[in-house]
Image 1 (cartoon, rainbow, N blue to C red):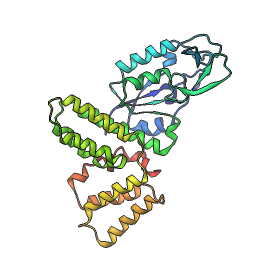
Image 2: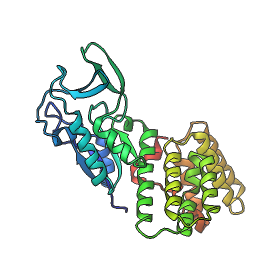
Image 3: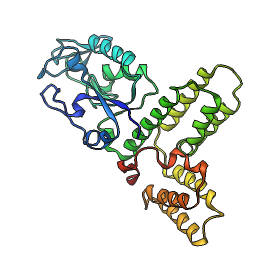
Length: 315
């Protein structure tokens, strides 16, 4: 099993660091995902010197400036949060393969943070947590998600898939890169890419196939940027179904008429929303065991993360 770390807001890990001395433990992160990853915990508000318990803080727009302060406008810690975020982003995130932030937090929220006017009589939901903003800005490839969005099974599956894909990449670049190693990596991700973005799959394949320069670093940077961008949007049932049909084609000479129909029916019922993804996938994996295919056996699409997480039971 891969051993790696992801970052997490400390309150989501169950630490009592919130303004009211409480926490917001994420059961999925700490009871399920924690069996497969280690966490590096961060509470930026405590890190910049705020006590536990403490008065609530919010984002407040004063002129053209946004402060992170108490509702009465005092105690602005915005600059400190930004400085701390930059420090962590540049010094400690290289070892991370993902990050889970606390939603709605003026320091850790990824998006839609309330920004109040100076009088406190109105707000807009267009802010970004000051700490989270720095982590994401300095690490644009790092898979990031909020705890609330992880309650959505499609977003949860997508986040975990991206975390494991990014870890695979981090392991790949531990050794000197070559076009051959990049091409092998891409070959393993062929059907996962196809399920998420067929155009990106073709574009990245063409990128590797037509490469003529000696600048392998630029090639690698362009490739991983394209890969992570393509994987960010959850795959649709239509795209998954088309990918499953492609995989079915590898067994057209091996399966009986009844087995072919059984697999075709499972794919069609998945496409129609009557079955979860794991049903046709389980059939394909069974046929792969009976009729081994070295190329297919290496496809990340079949097992992009530990099966114990049961993420494909709900999509």
